[in-house]
Length: 160
Image 1 (cartoon, rainbow, N blue to C red):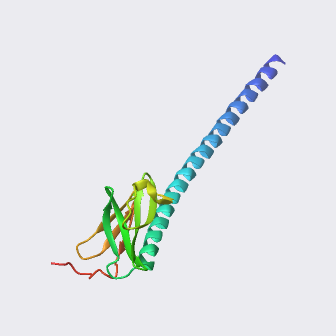
Image 2: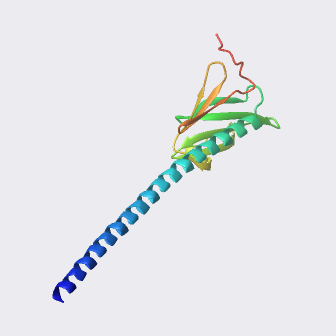
């Protein structure tokens, strides 16, 4: 009888060890899956934000595209897309730029001066840059994505 009880306790311990290994394996697979899902979700969110920012800049430039009104200028040491317009005899400028992890927009009378934090925060963006080529085309780069704008004032061919 004593051998019988000892055999059952060894069987019970063996079953508990196998169950523990199985439960631990399931837990590790779930944790790994959750981590992978979080990483994919974060990357997707970043890409979506970059696409949204580029779409915003493209729409803004397209809505105010009059010959000679769009350029890339330096705004307090930051590359910025500037849209110039004249409203009832007064010159205004819309400045779109990246600063401190945000995309900003500043609409102001050109006779006034503002600092970088004077604009309105539009969207979170890690990095955005604007580059104007000699022949008028403008490249907007947000993170890993870029957009090429062709304002009406651009000729599409290099200027000598």
